Image (cartoon, rainbow over all chains, first blue to last red; front, side, top):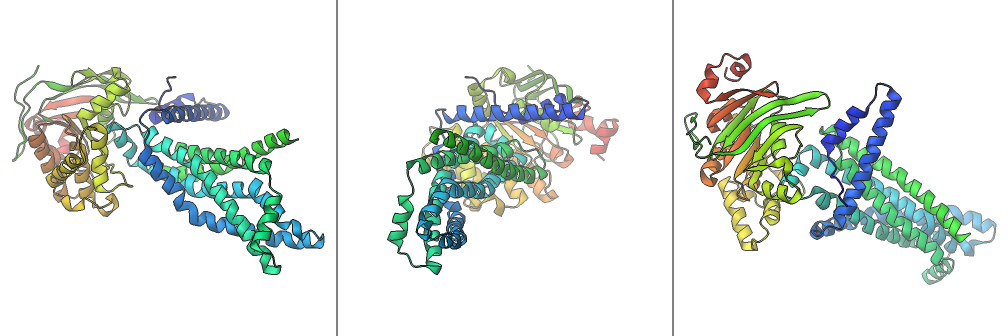
Length: 276
Length: 260
């Protein structure tokens, strides 16, 4: 399959040529040009992913950057998520005499929905904006051009490594945040109650089964891929001015956050259909 | 083929051209949207010479050299580099050509996330894959000593001054022994003393590595110091070509404005 490379200069030309005198026609033209560029970008990334000269060192560096360097943020978020969910839910469950259901309820909501979505949104903010800003500034300062004249494929070196690292590391971060969330929930349950660690976890996992975990894990891979693709696309296709770096970082966060919610909705619908 | 000696310029002349053309550009055209930046540019870079391309900002000088290494695709005309039509080259062929053509970017374009050593090793590991670790270290040391910045080896680009960044960038360009060097505004944004240092380095590189260079600039001091020959780019075409004396005697107002 011969997939054309993304040529930023041509993208600009095409946009200018496509814009018709009418404003709506112009906006629609721009939209379809952008859509075509996104499709080419994704296809080019997939093609380069399976090329022979995989940039393994850069991939490992990106895994470190995305995974390890996001751990403190995810740790705090995970613990607070579990803690707050428990503190908010406990009084209601106490009123209904169902406080023993607390560990299972918190664990299910964390693993199925809260953990993946909130962690992905945090990652969209930190990782997506980082990718958009880094690649955008590399574009503005001609570092991507320098890479190209050094016989290095920038798509392979910069984009493939980041997208794959995000796709792999974000699910791991989500599982880590889930685990810390349950830990935070146990801490929250002990503020006004008294429950042992072993009892809390056995109650929590008694209510979790395979069908809770599988869709959550699958959608977390999609979240990772979406954040990686959007961050890289916005950075790689940034304009030439310094203002473009801010625009790339900002739009990477906004679009990837939106797409995380959309992907979540789709996966929930599919899971609901399959389960019912 | 034109093998005659071209004119030398300034008090410390660079080596004159000694061979036939290594780059031949014929009727080059490039437009952005409806704006025609290069209408019909024709010029030759001879083996061993330093050719300076002068022109006002926005005259298409940078576009011209980006077309040479296919960072941009031209709309019409032809570019032949070392006997090969660049528009006909595929991925592998283009990669091979780029190994022979070094490009010094206006901004330096050092990789921010890498140390000076990693910046220098980056093109070397990709273009000279058969080199051993000790050979790479030796090459890094050689080019860094050539630009006088051996002590910056483990520094990050953000710790360097503008002039140092340009010199490291030049070191990164010459580390793979290119036959042709393309300089995009090598002295822009530098103080006069640092600009002179960069101009001297360009001449040293020409002498030591026997390179042919196309130097895009609007810095007349740099042009005087480094050029064997000059061309003036104006309104998308070459309006004047020759030695420094021809340029100094020109009555064209744009040319005169450069030599005031």
